[in-house]
Image (cartoon, rainbow, N blue to C red):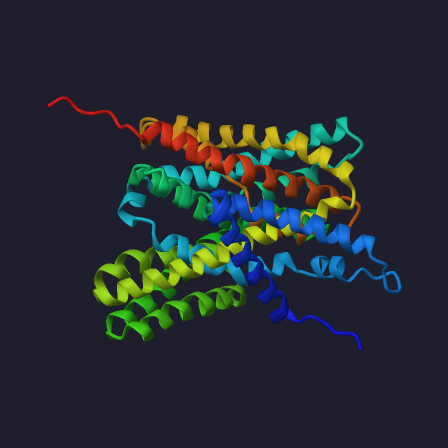
Amino acid sequence: MESTLGPFDVATGLVVLAAFFGYLNHRFFGLPQTTALTIMGAVASIAVIAIDEALPSVNGHHPIRSLIEGIDFRYALMEGMLSFLLFAGALHVDLNALKRSRLAIGIITLFGVLLSTAVIGGGAWLIAMATRFPLPITWCLLFGALISPTDPVAVMGILKSAKVPPDLEATVAGESLFNDGIGIVVFSILLGVVANTGEVSAFDAGKLFALEALGGAAFGGVAGWIAFLALRSINEHNLEVLITLALVMGGYALSHRLHVNGPIAMAVAGLLIGNHGRQHAMSETTRDYVTKFWSLIDDMLNAVLFLLIGIEVILVLKDVSLLLFGLAAVPLILVARAVSVGLPMLALRNLSPLSQGAYPILVLGGVRGGISIALALSVPAGPYKEVVVAATYTAVLFSVLLQAPAVGIAARRLFANPPVKDS
């Protein structure tokens, strides 16, 4: 009798593996958790695939490989984990520090994503022309859009441990939180062009952008404010934790029904609850419970997410030659990040100057993560999808394994010994 594994079984396996690998890392290796779980997930994935291939197949069916390939990474992240991760991340961002850098964050988030998309898209087209993977310019721009959003999850913990100044930490976190939403909107517009729907004009693109981005921010503010009023009217910590959970789950689900950007909505709601909610609507006991609850959710989902990123190495093992395009795109992505952050900062140097050391931290802090992989997997099947998926995975793997630790090193060197003022 053939047995099948349901979503609960898969989720159970991922949590058990994340706990086991996390324990091994904490006990023996001491690497940053994101790096360790990604490496261990990739090694485990390669090992089980090798074992699966070595064993006799049953009617051409390799059960372990089929199980890994059957994990819907895009759905698990975009429809499951993302709302929790963005809300939990936004809870810990200082809104006052964010407001002081709001102009710089807004400009870098909006124009930085658009500029990064253009630079990566144009560069990818040149790389494609020089290799055996020719991609149309529209697909290259689509790749630029999906790889431009950075991952706040991968870098915020590193910044905290490196004792980055609060204003700079808020700038990096705010830019990462909101460029996810902007990047998803730009990706959606370009996906319509690639799919040849014939429905995407400049006016339609602008309208979609305004509805998704501005509508998401407005919806997140309204949903967060309703939750804030509910929290302020009672003093029961268990129920108040439940209200924050309902805000995330219900708010994210409703954002899809309203066709507004859910990630932006959850970031705004998290900022509101994490600042005004904590100060004016929660007792000390409730603040402690809410903080610990969302810290646990954040850590647990982080572990599962980066384990999944490692496991998804199977995506590029089908054709190792596809890695060439991804490896060639890695320096291009770094250059695009340097340009997309540097030009807005240069334009804002007199209007909204950022603190010393902001530029290298923002550039290195542009770590790519699960969102880019999820967007790549959502691209319709076609002759170019495998190239885009492989390039995306290669760039994310480089970013998580090498770029993320570099942020911590750079931050510690810049801020470990702040200058002492003369008395």
